[in-house]
Length: 185
Image (tube, rainbow, N blue to C red):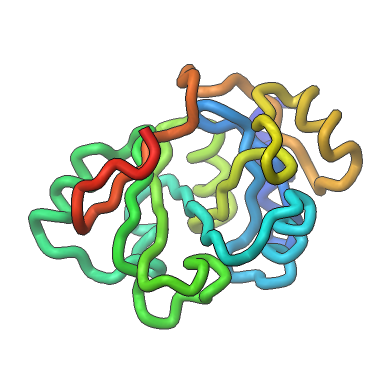
């Protein structure tokens, strides 16, 4: 099956409340519709991860993140935009009304405009930002191949988009946009 067809199929499954694995810049990610609480709860249960941590949202462009981000001051927005699309996740102020399951109850949210072509295509076909967390059980090593995703999750996922990783050896950098602090190198 062609990658375009696989992306469309995976996007349909996400729209129906599914949890899907897909390649990102450094590891396979697990994703779901960020506004579907049942899908989000299922993703956390699969990972065996507590819900207080908050998650990263990825998108094909900044417009897909706009419903989740508060308007940024001009200098902060310029700094963030200069790194996108790319492997930098930013912690930014969350827009009022963003579900607390996405923020871990904080006033901020972690967001990235991905440069990975399959992950970006999945966001475009899905029609918005996706939750993106590493494909592993909590505390385990993130999967770097589709085979490893299958070994970890067997048939618990609704789909796996198979493709190459983006070439990074380590997960993306995380920075705080308000302070400039490096959270994860």
